[in-house]
Image (cartoon, rainbow, N blue to C red; front, side):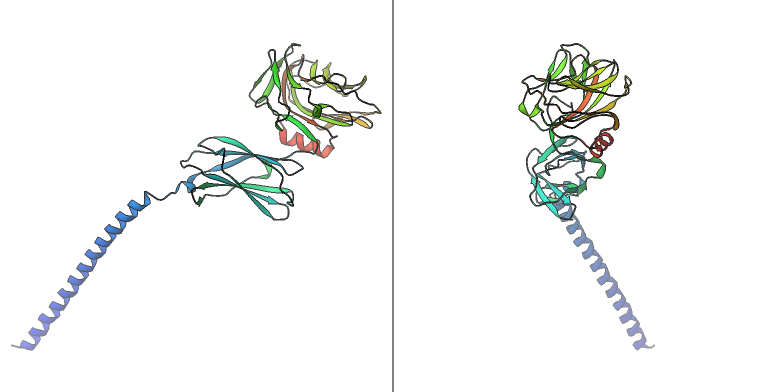
Length: 335
């Protein structure tokens, strides 16, 4: 019998068993360590704030003025997490950026809120805006505006009534409903009664004696009715289906009648010592040369007196509007 071979065989088997035992011990150790780490990760993950990754925002509208002031409407969609700040990022035409942190009036789920900002010194024309939610010390995703919701207001805007409520967009000349007039579904609704109208008041900013423009959307149920008036200073109304502007006894009237039950965009652009124009759906409808000294008075501006139908987006300017401005307003407010 070869004892040497038997010894070597047993030694080899013992080595294999040792290796298998070591492997089993290592695997058991790995399993134990994994269970410990996995438990710790799960416990720690409960305390990790991840809501900033799931918060979703949408810039619904960005209104910009010629001076650089802006008003931005932000919508928050479904998604848990408490926003502690909003970071607004403005990009100008030269590629520069400017950041404003908003820590008040913050959004809850499914809310939409508007944020107003003054002009930024030494900053170019704004080309894009984005908003980033902040949760604690964490920044969420950046949500950018698109060009379709950027509304650039022509210069000279005095007031703008959008009729989501009775307020002036510039918060200066808020109106008051009279009679049976009402605001519903984003429009001023009038019944044609002389006691039903929207009273805007007589702030001196509404007096016009050099240049004046009014941009307004109307849908009328009749061929006659007042649209806007401030006594002999200025008056726009419907007569036999045509748009007429009157000031100090002088008048201008559209060539064509407008159809009832259709939204029409009406712009009256007046230089009292120059050219008067009426536009309907951005088409020139009347032109007149004037040399008039308009009367300034203390009468209230009344909107929709004896008008039967709907009025929306009345904008008053202390400047004349060029065709490029009228095109922009028509295309961006089109019904």
